[in-house]
Length: 281
Image 1: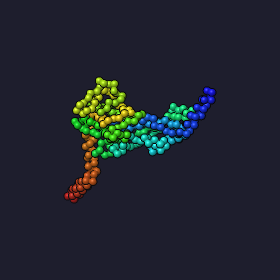
Image 2: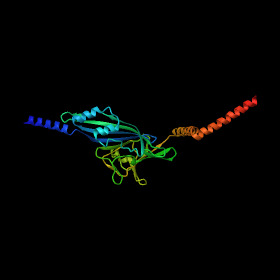
Image 3: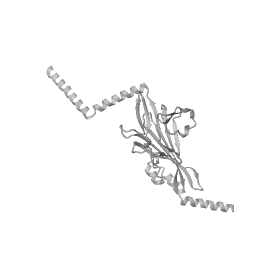
Image 4: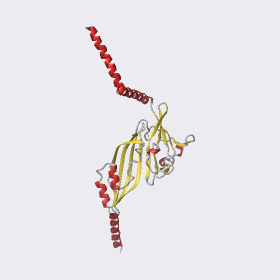
């Protein structure tokens, strides 16, 4: 009886695997690594649960594709997308890196696999902020404030960010970041009570610890804010100033007006040289 039951169970699992071949998004981790200049790099890891040999074979046959639209079509998962909106920032160098299947159960015809998305985040223009807005509010010190509207996670009616179950948002700040403030204490540093101080003026919590990687999972981030300071050294400020001056001079010379001025000056110089040569004769 036991052997017969086991055989029937195996046949049932085989049938289920064939009949319900599918892809399911199990977890999603969106990691934003901030650069000291306010640009960023995003890595999104989507862990898939694959059911059925047909879907497993489809996944393995598709590893040659590194574009997002191909994977969205093949898996039928609409949430395989960038969770940073192109309406607010520029996204470049986007690629998809499929990882090999793992934790396979041959009897149940199931496997896990990860799709990793990589892309860079920059401002659309010099006038618009990128994923953060920058405010040089005192000499050599810039305050960077996260623009939460950039994220394309689900939203409540009051525009709060919803991180569904299994979804994690991770922010990696530069090592030089200071005066770190956020509206919601990150999950990974909640035990560091002595490293927090509430600022009544800004209604935010300031963090003074050494951690620079912060994460929030499966929750609603009400009126989510995150800000931090980056202070340039005097040497960096001088280098930036001369680089700025050099760029402005270069742009001025090679603009339409600049080229016209160069032609006028060149004409005058050539005329003076020609007149001087006539006097010499």
